[in-house]
Length: 221
Image 1 (tube, helix red, strand yellow):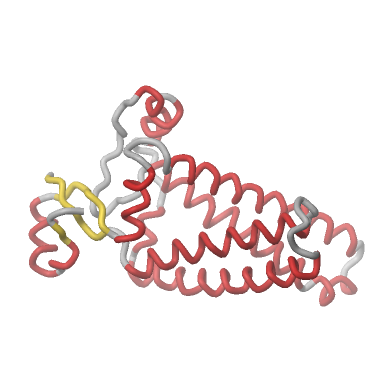
Image 2: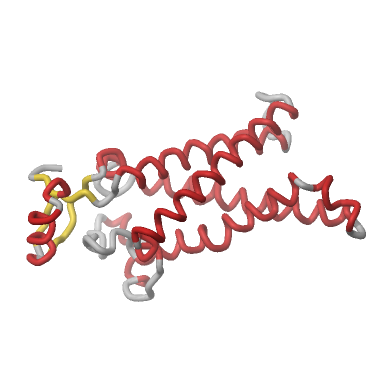
């Protein structure tokens, strides 16, 4: 294995990441306004902004899901138990003692076990809860008259939506915090801007990339 500067985040993945981050920020800001946490927006303005941002994010996720499965990138988000305990211990203890990260990023596995498990939970549990409750809330006038206790149902839906949103907010806070530890904020953010990061490559992987995709290898990141 040799360390090489490799493009591990293609253009669409970087666009998806930053567009998603912006839209989630807008959703959290407008959602807090709708719940009275701040008064920087009127309730009507917050609802309109929240709805537009939600529909834009849903469209982005449709394209991202298509891209993940057509490129095979979805495999990066499948969690594995191997190394999970070591990575969890590092974040809970070792990171404060200056210990090296136990996970070595490789070409076919850029997310460590804890990252993969977190993203898996977000994409298959929390985000679906946000979308299902959000669309149910948005379409309340269409189904409220068709069910008994419509007021009770909308209360339950609203609370599940709010809980899922707070879990997303917690993820964002932890995600940003982890960018500040280790090798420094810029070293963590730069790969998601340029697409290139220093990872371990086998001789076979390096030979393949230099022959078939030479643009994916740089001498310096």
